[in-house]
Image (tube, helix red, strand yellow):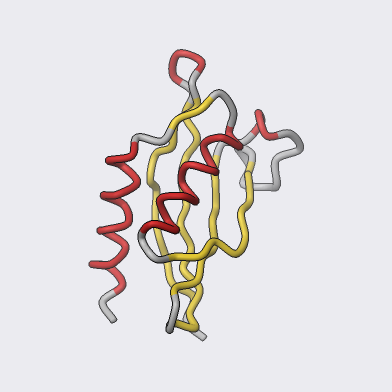
Length: 102
């Protein structure tokens, strides 16, 4: 499977959705919904601080890392986003995606 093409489609869907929210947790829900619509099942989500350590509180999150599975694919897909807060509203910026092959 050509993961770069598939992940580009996921990126496009998430960018079109323009996920935003009053908290990072609302942002995560929107991103996870877009991943599910694209055929991925999120399995683990982490809110990370500026040092890329687990955030002590959701409002300290600067990055979101979501691991997901796709039906019929035993590999783990990892999607990473920066958390921005322009004008007091949290928004996601796609940073990268990767595949952990099993």
